[in-house]
Image (tube, rainbow, N blue to C red; front, top):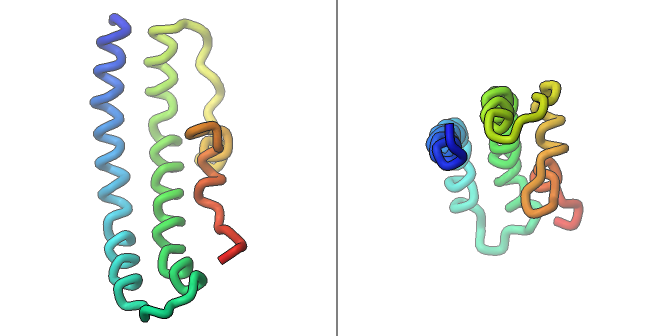
Amino acid sequence: MTEQEYLDQQESFLRGVEKDIAAQVRPEMEAAIRTMESLPDDASKAEYAAALAGLNDTLADAIGAAMFTHQRRIAEGAQAIGGGTIPPMKSPAELLRYGTVDSENIANQFERKTDV
């Protein structure tokens, strides 16, 4: 498998994972939208945060579960291209803690902020 074939395969795979996550999160997202739309115009930051709490938790859980479920496939594909050894499996919480997006770990992006 060439590097480009691997990248194409991974892109297709990740689009499928993204659709699975969206399907899991959609009911909670729709509920959060309804709740936010029903808030009064003078709602506090805390009320907005409470309206989004379930969505935040559901999204973190869905992403962690997807990372956990598919970590072996991702590691095997990367190993086929770059060599090396496959690292030990990690739990969903570990994957969120050690995975990063824009130099920030994923778990931090789902933490509740105390200044609301």
